[in-house]
Image 1 (tube, helix red, strand yellow):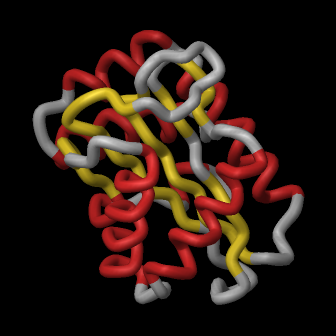
Image 2: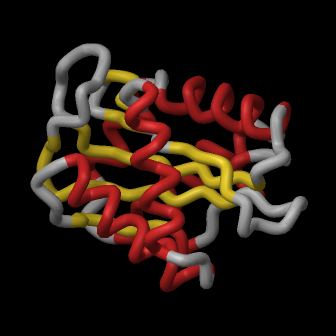
Length: 156
């Protein structure tokens, strides 16, 4: 499974308002629930529980919140790309505010797939040009097209 397999236009949101890490994760959980049918409070709790283990802010204005969920089918993995309308303190390793979030949800029993997807995400978001293009996107369509183009390269 690759990143291009887990993201769709319906799983992308541009200019999300929030103000705090908890509020962003709450709003993101509601967005995910509306798209996926998963329970918003279950998604939120999974993401918050993971954040308590250590921040998923990887630096350069990016966070990759992720968790395993009991309610997901064995073959599912879901990715959600969210651009924030302003930087938010996410306790990132470089202490920089986060402007881009990629939420990864995988089934409870997934191990290697989860780790592989996280590694691919870290590689993509380490690309300065990619991050900058995502930050410059003015709407959801532009955000999706930029991400889709980058994630398609990993197939090549």
